[in-house]
Image (tube, rainbow, N blue to C red; front, top):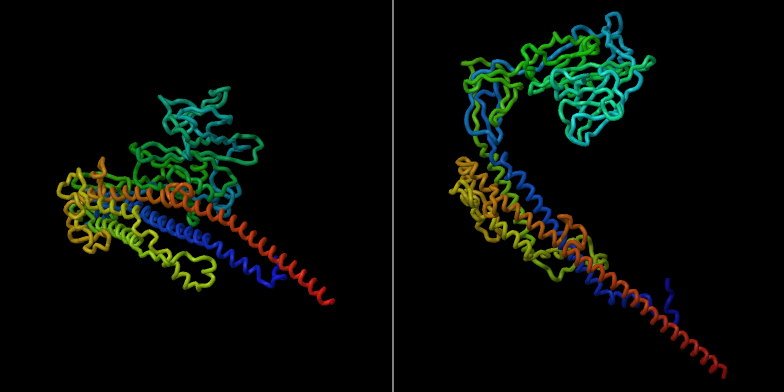
Length: 606
């Protein structure tokens, strides 16, 4: 805090402030230039964001065959068969002469009640050991559970363990969560791909070794758990297996280890989450467990073979699951175009057409025709979306490059903002931001390239009669002020799609060796990528250019910051000089006043 003007009576603080305001005028101009540059950079980045969105949309819409070659399927009787078509479907007709049987899932259920008739019904939420089950689970005493997880470092079939394995019946081996059948020795020939053999003391330094029936992929996660039996074990366990079959007809053996402190709910969740592909629930009314395959159909190719085989007392005695009580699943059996065939599911895809059987019907009574054709509406919508997004982008950029530039409306300083209302500031800055990209060469050049991409013929197409965009009814508007916006003759476009949808697709999506051989959308996407790169070199914010030194406007911004910083330091020196001069003046005036008072006193004494 300075106290001044005692000698002169002048408001020196205000005088210095006014002088420094005049001195700082060049710096205010630099700050306004810097603000204008920042606005320009933001507008460039906004355009780049729109270009990147447009570029991504091209890939996700008009370049996707599933959109441009969309097919529709119709069923002559949707009460019996529903149908949809993918882009892979050919135009034609299927005739389903009959559906002799629908696909069903294999099921099994407890052969009798789980609870002891003379005791209270079991509680599914409490530990198995505390419940009154009628059957025996075949518990064994156990002490600790040894568990080892190994990540395969290279492809091989064997690995040494740090864990000493006990009885193979109490060992569970999983690879990436899928159980493997544990065996003690080779059977006839080699063990199966889904089996693993325990080679006791066969590894390095006498370690137990696992030998798999097929090479494991590098990075596979092998989990080995073994239960060591002890006489004084405080926990009991039981091991059991479920054998199912996959679509290739191969066995899928899933091994389970349950402990007596688990609840029935825990057991069912463990079964449902396993790789066995089953769904399990407990019905309290009947007091029974129900087990069904999650997939319909029959997968065991052995005649009379079971689809689900339960092994171990836990399943067969504890949960009362009798393998002979299985109700095996069936395939969907039908005749298509006179050919009798089957599928595992009631919903399946044939030559790109997905059919869902609703009901059975006999031959000669309700034959169902499934017809496929090009979904013209979907293709039309895809092309119209592309044109609309292109026009929006052209309109936005033309607006920026054609905006009027107001030279008299510069960015506001802090003092100027403080003297204006919010509405006045908003209107001022709207004009100040206008025209910053007027006639920008980068943008005009980029969109000129877009127009050339759109209007030039596509070379190398199979369809010589369809190689320009105008041939499918898409042309530029008559108004030159639109800057090359497109308009669609929908009747002509629809006719082109109906006549040759593949040719229309290739016109947009052809991927030839040169730019002239590429489809229109692929050209525009490549040009958009190039324009994004040019703008990012100028304004940053994309392609990893986030630091000022990495792009042109950023380097100008950094230069302004350096100039403003240097100017600030000089202003501090100027202000110090002003204060020194005024202080010297104050001191001189004070001395002069003192001398005058002294002379006046002497004259008065005469």
